[in-house]
Image 1 (cartoon, rainbow, N blue to C red):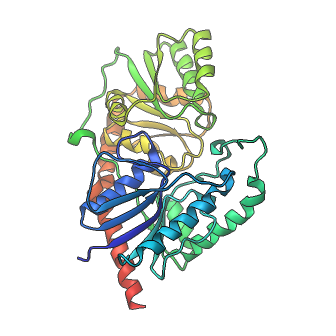
Image 2: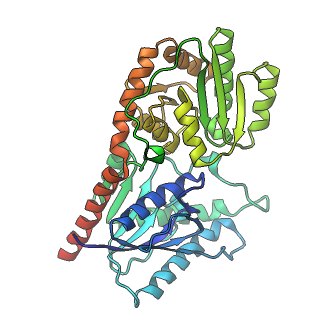
Image 3: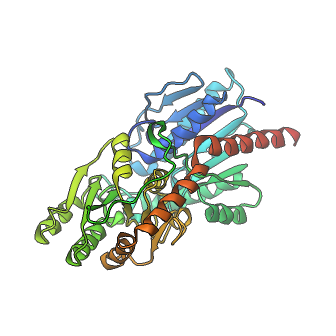
Length: 394
């Protein structure tokens, strides 16, 4: 099997193997996995924080952008990525150029590929065009409305130029294949491993009478709708259910949550842990009875996959990536309405039927076996090698 040499034009705002930074963790798991399999990877990253070193994975951190407007920073980053590729072409021969985890219109011009196949992705639902995720202009009035049409056109042209488009969920992959028929589309789930190499083959439902533990893992920001969980817990407590809930994360909605919890006398059943390490997140997930995700249009939902991997059933809103990850009524529950009452009913259904919880848990673990690094990297490696073979024959 040929060992590939890959230039990664852009790989996340923080490429990392330990920080609670979803996009950076996703990118690292793929790139480091390929490096471990003998492929040489040269990465241009905006920033990185990596503890696990690999001689086949070289990361160059880009300097802070010099343009005064954040809306133009993507143009500068694209230019710098191209210049880095030009500077390396006399030192090494690359087989593939990969624009990784591109944030939509933050790729405003087609990355240079020097005649090599261009790979784009992985892509997620609605990222980052969800308005709730957009930062506010530093000077009050931004130029984003002026540059956005040009950025969208550049992003469209980038997708049209791609030889391979990687998507994280099957329906998204199918839609991209229809829109860009000249490209090959690969559906590639995120790599999610059971923590600390502990093989979890089965979980046991908690004993009725003991507290039923809910966990929320996300930034406490408007588009995550964290208040819905607090409202659901209030309803469940009123109905006499022995519920405990823990928020892992922080953000601008925390103050509103704390006021509501104090007002409704919920301090004894709802707690906040703030931002915690990935290891701690895994420990909370393993000890929780349910993961609750109230995000609207979640692009993927890494914490959902991590919970299922350790046998913790999930209750999510029926939108975005979770609507494809979770099979409603089989390995979790998808809720159609973003209300406290709707989530309370779903939680109560599992609370009152521990056999249902057990079935969800067993089937979640079974599904997660296709998300291991071995399973995902085999498919990715095969697609990249086929791409190079196809290109060499043209």
